[in-house]
Image (cartoon, rainbow, N blue to C red; front, side, top):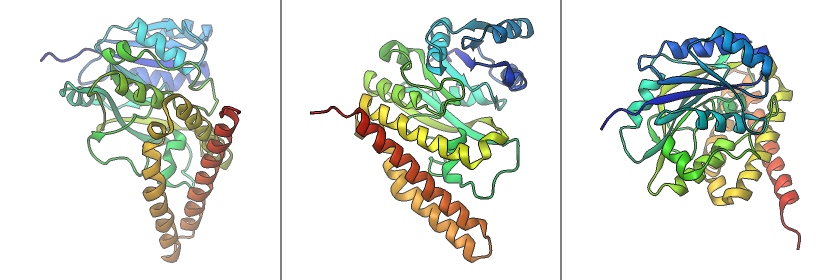
Length: 310
């Protein structure tokens, strides 16, 4: 079987992240298995598009031709790219040199329609002592509770994911009613798409390949309690939308195990740390409780608002 070609799509929306965008592009130039093409989609940002075209002659820089937002930008990247596999790297992330190579290894199985990688936080400010590993998804990174090795998953993390083009042909694109718009904390469009793609491709699997690594910038603004709380509320709202579209069973299949096993274990770990002399253990335990309550409460409120009235 021939090795599939890979197009990498980077979606960007502001020149404020210019240094991060340059780092992302440079990491893609250094791949051990080069991409067939790198496509940078500027999300309704003409100044960014002009600057990118001048700075990256080897990158295909195009405007988002769909609705403003991450989903529309990703769909444009899929439509305008040519690779057998479409990989997505966040504009504030850097791919490890073997990022594409590790993805391709996971695609050796024909029934694999999507592969996600490990997202390592690149802290741009000291990590708060209260920030628990179980909630690293708040900053778009891999968190405690994910499989440690290659394993089937419901959906990948959006900062580091890929899908076969055939999955988009079968299931369509990302839902433009979902996804981030600028700095908005909502998301989960990759969750909804992965559920839909698996339903559209008989026997199709989405897997996690932790060896495919990227490093995701965590700015000082993302290390605050305010951001933590806003992101938890946004996740709850997003999961409510996914539940309405894909059904509660599919939308919350991963979260049930996470809430029942991973989070209680995290609370106990924090309390044990407190008893052994680490006062920040209590703060991490409380952050897990607070984050769970905020996410679940936001989910319940959003579901009630969208429930049909009889």
